[in-house]
Picture 1 (tube, rainbow, N blue to C red):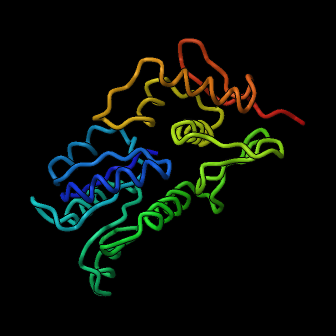
Picture 2 (tube, rainbow, N blue to C red):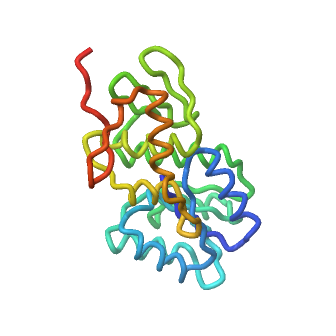
Length: 224
């Protein structure tokens, strides 16, 4: 899942990037409101959630939050701030934030809160996805396939997660590359094919279908 991180402290932004990648997200970081507006305007809805610092060099993060909500953008927003009084948290939530964390914070807790926000946004109660004998756990990036445990690399799980969100939908190679990489990362030409091959080795050759000229989708559920 692609996450937009809006944080002007480069050390903290880098730490967030590392931690969120280890948790299976694909974070992209910007350091000011201007760059954040450009990223959101050009993403086509690809960012699943936003982690937003309140104090930014060119304004308040809550101003961006207000603009997003006024424009009908309902994707989850988690506010970060050194301002952690109860009144600050109440104000942030009342302005349209879905969650609020004070600095300093625990990266594992931040990732867990993001997973919870995304589940709520997708209408799911449990932190798992299920399809055709596979139970994929979003919190640990592991699974059980027809009763046997299976492990995935972070990028294998990101790709699998995207396919499992809408099992019957065809996901283009470009769309899957967007999930695997941030805008500032170079994409290797065969990355998607390599990860699909590894997933098929773990889940069976027929678990992921190639739709020629269009992309990939999960095979229809079997009756067994």
